[in-house]
Amino acid sequence: MSSSDQIQRLLFDGADVRAVMVGLDKSFLEATEHANYPASIQKLLGELLAAVALLGSNLKIEGRISLQAQGEGDLRLLMAEVDHNQQVRAVARFEEGHAVPEDRFDQLFENGRMALTIEPDGGQRYQGVVPMEGATLAECLESYFKQSEQLPTQIHLAASATKAAGMLVQVLPAAQSGDSDWEHIATLASTLTAEELLELDNETILYRLFHEEQVRLIESDPVKFHCPCSRQRSANALQMMSEEELLQVAEEQGGAVETACHFCNKVYSFDSADIKALFHNDGALSENTSLH
Image 1: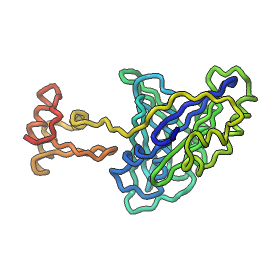
Image 2: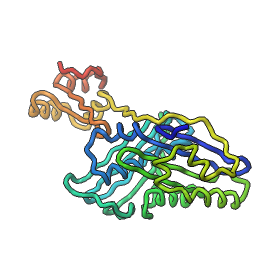
Image 3: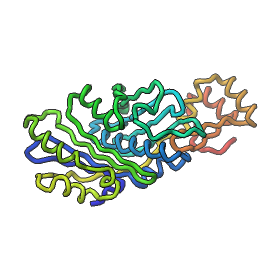
Image 4: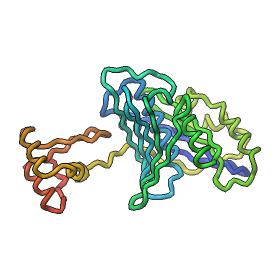
């Protein structure tokens, strides 16, 4: 069993504890290849992607979950998202030409704030505030589960320029077996290192940590990069402006308005005929990207 682009769930027989492991290789590179991120931001996005994949592993509804950290200063935004099909994407916004130091996570942003958002397809959106109090992203998330969910949780995250990985260990919500099981398993899991996460496959890691435990593996699921942007979604965003304003911008820009997806860098063009159709054809446009 390889951890490459897979999410692996496991349960401990006789203990109300679950664990999840994720490894991101191709999916991580595809999620970040559209932008020339500095090494420090690439690593942060890797950890964020691994984290959101772990958090999404228990998503019970069709929809998506996102983790977003933002603030002021040279680093303005880090965001990663996963949907119920284990499809991930990520984006960062920062001041070009300014180095982002490899510092404590809670000191990377000026006036920083972080949120966990769950968006069901066709349901009510939920957002929880994640305390930005910790030297690492993992510590911030552990604080969130302790304060908001009252669930003892241990999270390990690691990333390099080409790979990201993570492990989550958590008490089940209906835990009945007491604190001793959690403390025992959490103590074993706490010995996991970043190097082991990045360099070893799941089987080797699980044997090193839990070879004396009864661990039941749930069938793994693939993780892949996917961006659900579309021509229609981009057109809908343009409707924040009026038809007259968009036609003027199109004329000033040589006959078309262009928008680019921040996640995958795909460019969508809209000429005057498209703009008129957007306001006089129920907003429906063809996915054909060729201009009229």
